Image (cartoon, rainbow, N blue to C red; front, top):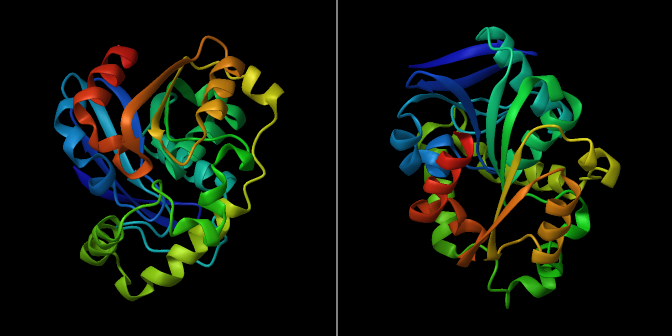
Length: 249
């Protein structure tokens, strides 16, 4: 089922697959639901209800005259849960979606059961220096390739209500991530949801930072995918799917 819900002045696109315990999928920045989670959806929806959303300005969801903030995006997801009559749900977020999921787990802990955070940091210094510094990006092996950017652009063009806004919206999202203040160590220590962290060994996120997060969040589990960049984390379905399915069970 695909539909739109009006939440906080936003006409938010969402899809519902399968039946059972709900898990909400939160895609990466400037990505679509299909591009982030498409290959995983059929398997994830076996024996559970998968709710895939497209956040403000992403995919089928048009942008509105509002800053992109983690608080705003998380509030939209909470409003969607209310609209669907769901008190609680598991969350599986990638990159920007992981930041939104972490915001939900800290600001709205009563709405989150289990938490899967893929390629997610909790402080600005959690990223490698070359991700922030344009002068270092050309030689970086961590940055998305031209093919990755082309795939992102084409996916946006296929479904966006205003496809001509790709460049300006990409800049808007990049600025939002650059403004990240993050969370305190005490906020991570207070997370009550069982948490699985997934990172690539050549991800945007520093491995030391991921290990630090796993040490702060109570009883968190950490998976490091070998030979994996940020763009490829969710493409490693043969590794990611069994871990996520086992964790959510």
